[in-house]
Length: 145
Image (cartoon, rainbow, N blue to C red; front, top):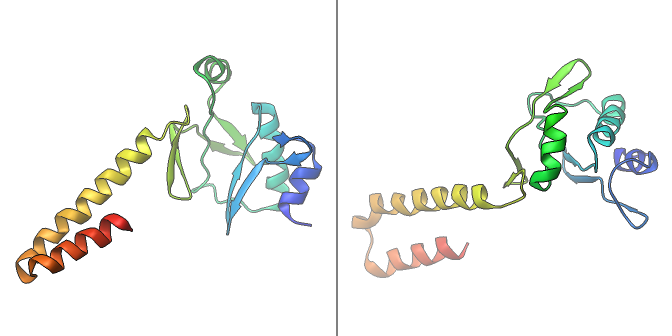
């Protein structure tokens, strides 16, 4: 039985109809999704039993409206898992996408823009070695990718 099945069978987490949507998984990366802090604690306890978590890579983010976040954050910003303290972050990176607590993509857009401009500036170093058509091809290839 997979960890996804164990979490789904627990009845805790997020469901759409009867479909469990409480985890996003890719390779060895997991994202747990729970409607309440207590549900998240239950999901984490199940994971703590069956999966060895790398506490150096474990991150916690609370998401929701400002009103709902004020309720959650008023009751505590961190969780304790297996004696380890998991502090709340303002934003996390999930499969290369920066998410913030209000689920806006502002930080992600900023990070991608900085990386793109850096790569475009690197073309200046080789610009003198290339003809105009080659430079145009490189810029178009970079922008299109």
